[in-house]
Image (cartoon, rainbow, N blue to C red; front, side, top):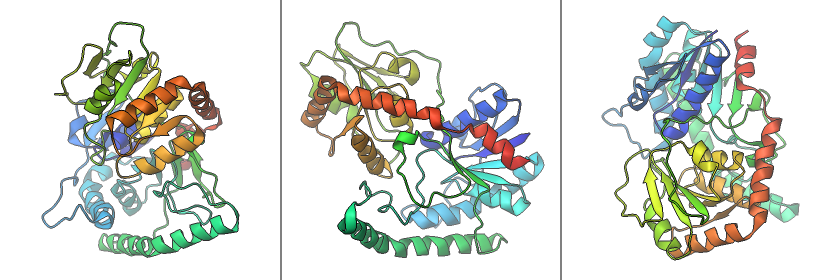
Length: 381
């Protein structure tokens, strides 16, 4: 089976796409990943990585307009990639949830496609408060009324998004009504999902898709103090200055700090801290707590390893995820970033084994997921 996997260049979306392709290749299929040029040089056995054309903003594009960025840009990307997709003639296309151009191009060519969500399911639900609020579902009459009022307040934006998607579809020769994907891969832990009364047919929780972009090993500082792993957000909406705040806050506590980073750090470090590129999965084997920005990739990676977290969320969905983790019990939320608050949160997690127990329960929930390769194969048949 030949599979085209489409994802934008941000690590939180490109890495799950590459990991899915790696698993497809291991199962004997032929995956091609279309993504940003930053990842064109990666070496994944059995996987071809190609440039996703149309990613660059065009004159007049407004990246501050989320609807235009998702829908109008998606149509542009779909049109730009049609020649490459036509030449490949895949049996199925897997398109990242925010890189919607892959799905539009597949539909234009009559190819079945699957949506990949590298996080929990974020579709609106009649039984939940709006995604992004960070709120737990309301309980009782008052709680249900609160959620209904919040959904009503966001309904206008949702209707506008539907209109923008319809206009983008018509502009590239598709019917205005969006039939949606043949299936959805929800690449998260069941522990991070929220029960909803209207779970869509064809949506499958398949577990997180973690890919390590390096084989380098980052060695923790010597000593026997607790190891605090720091993973600053790779998203443009993430909180800046995390490593410096963590080191300032943890001075004098006797812990050790190891920070994994995609890019070099210019933060002055004390002797009990190191920073650099390194496999996060290996470092997690030694970590006692993770301080991270709330992106799904690092959060789910820590929980899969049974390691509790201190979450300093930025924008996007990080607030939603941080609150889910805190309610689940495996982490503590800190906002805004403050050195003293980080210190208090780290000490709280290290001093209460309940957080570690909750993280291990989250890890155990992975036993309930479906195989994403199996789902893709069933759609392509």
